[in-house]
Length: 450
Ligand SMILES: C[S@@+](CC[C@H](N)C(=O)[O-])C[C@H]1O[C@@H](n2cnc3c(N)ncnc32)[C@H](O)[C@@H]1O
Ligand code: SF4
Image 1 (tube, rainbow, N blue to C red):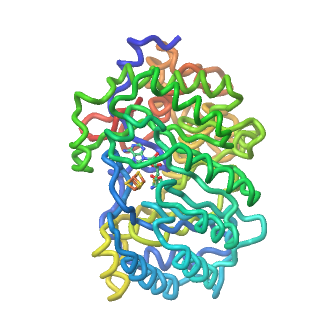
Image 2 (image 1 turned 30 degrees about the vertical axis):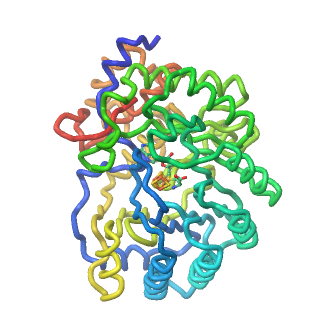
């Protein structure tokens, strides 16, 4: 049983796992041949992520890599540079098959419908988006028109994810996010009329003014809209990385215990409404593909988030985008000006990278299984990697002992299991297998774990 005392003890800052290895282990400014050689090895279907950084305004809580602009011609310039990046991308062959395409941001629907058409034709010139592929777009309801959605449907988009965060006018005003609940519901209905599926709403907990009663109202309104999926992100307050977050005074923010209460409130409310928890921070209706993937153990997590699709190398395009290739992770320049300069003038375009060792891949697998399924089968790891868990991970398994005593994880001969009431602390268990933290996050500055 995870008591409030335990929650507080384990709520200290920790890493936010999407993929592994953690950031401190990356190499700065790796040479571009790292990208060229990585792409040259590809021979099957891939996933593609395109980052569109622009937003009309900046929400005070925003932790994304975004740029404020009200000028549509800024989007034209971005697409010009993206075109150059795509045309010069050293892919093996003119067009690679793609099983998954995702536009993230920022706000992809900040682009006009005409700009979105151009973007898709640029992508399709280098990638053959296969029939049945998942084509997803992140959408901010405040800037997304019906025309945007018509055009996205026509371009083959199969799912959208709407940033909602809160439906409470007081919370929205405090975080400077203009938004109408009615518009969210309209866009969901319109997306359904185009037969899109896996429709997702992003919510956040830990925002200023978010009392349990107010948050419960937002949850009830969201449930009434009936999305297929809900992503519930804990607000990451990292003002040393995102100085604009200082406008949210720390005194205004819920305490770690209040955050945990909000998370648990959402867990109960969403379970009561027929949503299954997925990994750390997602919920899906039981008939949704993500829930089915969680049930049959095929759920995966990469830099784009949770997915039920089989693993495919990920090519990241645009400013700050991350490529996750079989033996390396690579990130594009993360500032708009330096990314433009790099692509336009043929200067080094990579800001960070990591060549994966055999040990990185093993640990990535272990961390991904724990983060996705809250379980680890020792037999599966042993078969796949040809090792003995007790020998290879002796010190990690020893370090799990206090977590076992505190009820964060159960250990048997067969493997590990994080109990349902410790789901919120699953990162604490995964972290033990992170070689670059040595089982501790001391000295590193991460966001709140709960
Ligand atoms: C790129 S944004 C989503 C699309 C669009 N820009 C919007 O806001 O509607 C991705 C999501 O990241 C989440 N997010 C942004 N800043 C965050 C932070 N500081 N901590 C946790 N989640 C955050 C929000 O839930 C947001 O919807
Ligand atoms: S949360 Fe979304 S809309 Fe708000 S600033 Fe960040 S990326 Fe833009």
